[in-house]
Image 1 (cartoon, rainbow, N blue to C red):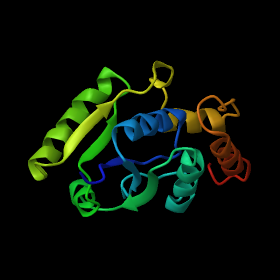
Image 2 (spheres, one colour):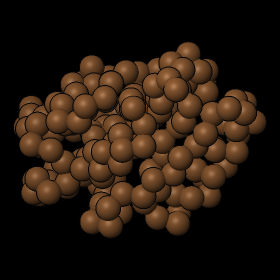
Image 3 (cartoon, rainbow, N blue to C red):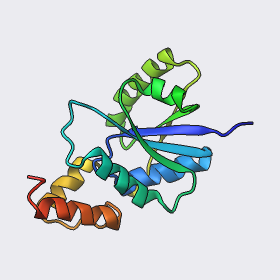
Image 4 (cartoon, rainbow, N blue to C red):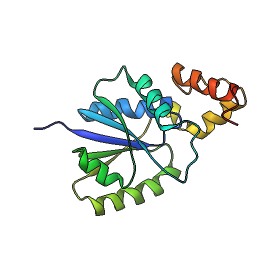
Length: 165
């Protein structure tokens, strides 16, 4: 049997401990997890794609079988091009489910052989999202329990230099 590849797409602006928890769980199920940044023109990220890729690399270097990438266009086309068998989606709360379920059904229609695997993060991360982390960081709050040390450093740099305003 070949290598089982999964794709974990997201904005990751920035990556949080909740994302890392999902990556670690996905890695138990799949031989390779490609963490890929979705290039979305409608979002105005704080960090560039390269900065986000570096934060993901630094934050996942302890996990074997993780690759970092980015993509534009349809996720199913990207996944097929990578030979993936599954898409990984994190579910934090019931409020995530309706949107994620709708997306999973659409992806199934577009690519019948591509599975969507929903993973719930550890309960201590269920309230965590990148937007909240950025807001707390910008207001000078302690974010060290929400993101890896490298990301804490990058957020402090952004907000101290005024680039995050």
